[in-house]
Length: 322
Image (cartoon, rainbow, N blue to C red; front, side, top):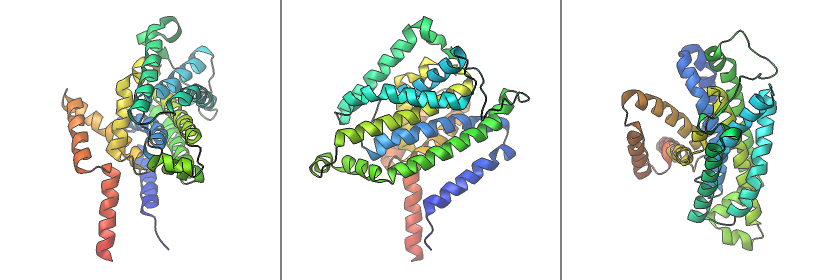
């Protein structure tokens, strides 16, 4: 029986995350919450980037949609169920992404990137300027919600984030990963890879290129909104800075850092970036420069990212054993 190294790595990683709250301080457990949010968002982003070949420079807009959708649902409408909030932001992001995708998906390369950047900055300007609707630079409060119908009132915020909400987000990441794995290994995912490799040939073969790009864009937006809702729940605030173009660049950074050509690459990139950022911020005020240097070294030395490097080493070891 052939053992799938990727599957083994995923099981080991899941097991480590399951026992993590028992062996590390609550601070580092809470640090995993943004990792879960970004990892889910990056699963969707990489469907667009790694599998369809479309690089979005404005994808943080959907993080913002998820965050502000959670703020409106819980803070304004009084919805206390986080599951209902997730369903609402998923539906809302799909509705918003559809007309944007109808325009952007007609283009590729830098034109697609610039269009998505323009829409992202328009959304940021709306959030920043319409103070009476969005709170402006102060953002919108996201009150604590129930998960699975349970309030967990006996937990303070740190205990709640490092306990029940940690496992809840881990379960969401596992579900999102399984769903995305099924998508990319389905005929739909194979069509996306064909479009990425040669869109003109795909058209000659009868593939509706624009429709598939449209679907990939909407799916990636839905995953991004779920990640944004998790990030907003963690800090209790939907902030317009979450939509700024630097956040979109951060998503690209994570995807390249982990390796966008590998399914698990963006997840590895999100974890590495979260830990690196925390450590570098505690060491130097020039942590952004350090991250830039690390990214440059990885792109130059290891174009496949961290995941690509790991799987290359695994293949070399397998050849030596043979």
